[in-house]
Image 1 (cartoon, rainbow over the protein chains, first blue to last red):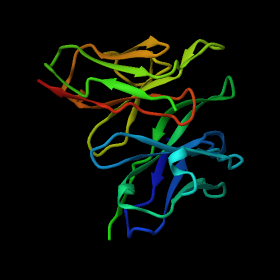
Image 2 (cartoon, rainbow over the protein chains, first blue to last red; image 1 turned 180 degrees about the horizontal axis):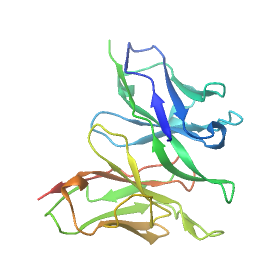
Image 3 (spheres, rainbow over the protein chains, first blue to last red; image 1 turned 90 degrees about the vertical axis):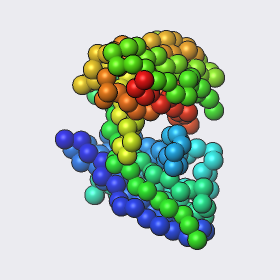
Image 4 (cartoon, rainbow over the protein chains, first blue to last red; image 1 turned 45 degrees about the horizontal axis):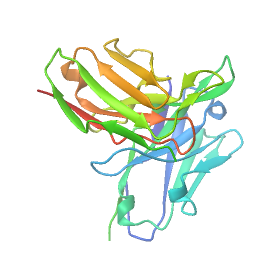
Length: 125
Length: 113
């Protein structure tokens, strides 16, 4: 069955970087875009960006430009999200999510049909 | 960026009663070439990732109970829970996937009265 399994919780000091992994199971990895969404404690959902695992193309929210990198390893069906220059406001649960794909139309359809379990990143001195 | 505005922020509904959540987008999310509204609804329970309930504004995801329904078009959308169950206590989010950044509403917390 489809699963997205993320790496475990992390603690970092301000100014450091974090790299989170999201390993895909149960589907053709390169067919489906992967997105990253974060959620600060007690807050709503914030879209960070996406990667096309097929060619590696990315699209990021303006807010994270210059600080975020998304990569993928097709040999292990894993997507990575790296965030640099961490500050306390980056403390959040980070989720990866799969974008739905319609095999009849051969088109990605935007909605997020599967999510990872989340990775808590704590930024604290 | 398309701004998504949900209302109310929270609501308390008696078991078996109807719950209605509204979502308004700052730009139409109706794609004229296919007549689809690029709008989804998610349910999030504490400690869990969001779960897709509704897509194309009104299509229920597989396995979602039929007490959940979505309606609306263009810029104004509604999620309705026809008969609230205890299992429906959660925060609900709308999301537009018409254009990146794929923005979410601020969330509506649904509780039992």
